Amino acid sequence: MNRADTLIELDGVTKSFGSFQVLKGISLSVKDGEAVCIIGPSGSGKSTILRCINGLIPIDGGSIRVGQHEVHKLKTEKEMRPLRHQVSMVFQQYNLFPHRTVLQNIMMAPVQVLGHDAREVEARAHRLLAKVRLSNKADAYPGQLSGGQQQRVAIARALAMEPQVILFDEVTAALDPETVKEVLTAIRELVDDRLTCILVTHEMKFAREVADRVCFTDHGRIVESGPPAQIFDAPQDARTREFLGQVL
Ligand SMILES: Nc1ncnc2c1ncn2[C@@H]1O[C@H](COP(=O)(O)OP(=O)(O)OP(=O)(O)O)[C@@H](O)[C@H]1O
Image 1: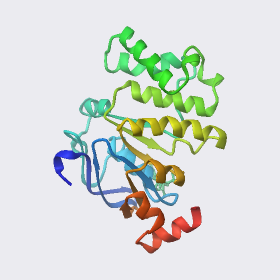
Image 2: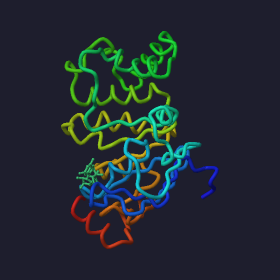
Image 3: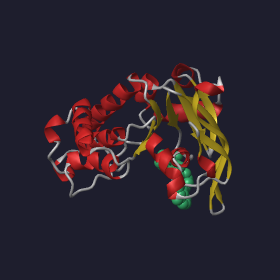
């Protein structure tokens, strides 16, 4: 892969919590506009990979580059700030502010953190609410929305930062099956727009349909990586086959 195309590059990333090594040398390159799904058993380190990429947790060894940012060298919140503009993350628990309306939740960071003009941000917020099909909920409070609706607000909030990359960490795991679909539809549209995405997901059908590439992780390593057709229809590694045999 041409380095110039590569937006995100992890090289030999290691991470331990106490004596437990969660990541045992993760190397991963993601091109601008690519959608990469990370799948694998519980505890294999999937969420930790995302948290390392956006600097939420420091790594022990190896390197991480996102665009121009050498993430492993950033120490203070001030140093992290430009990275935070470039990389947004959406979590399983939507983490919306309960006492702020939907519109206020979306506008808060672009106005307060990025210092953007409030009128411009409000117009952007309305466009994003239309995109996730929640135009009629701008003045609602999170508690008045379903889980799927709250998650779509969280996606609109992430987009309001105009990031180059969005990291999705099991964003449908807490939702009931009926609302999973509406959230996946919103994500699929971002992938179709060629926004660079890394998605940790247990939704295998979705991963097969949207991913340019799927990475299977186990015990802190990427065991196998390739196009969905390879991973799901002709996995090369015995552990990948065993895992997919259990979940498909
Ligand atoms: N802050 C932390 N302190 C201590 N241990 C942690 C911490 N974060 C994660 N771990 C441990 O690291 C391991 C990997 O966690 P991680 O959340 O990355 O796994 P995962 O593959 O995303 O799992 P799941 O699919 O269940 O979310 C787990 O054993 C977890 O308990």
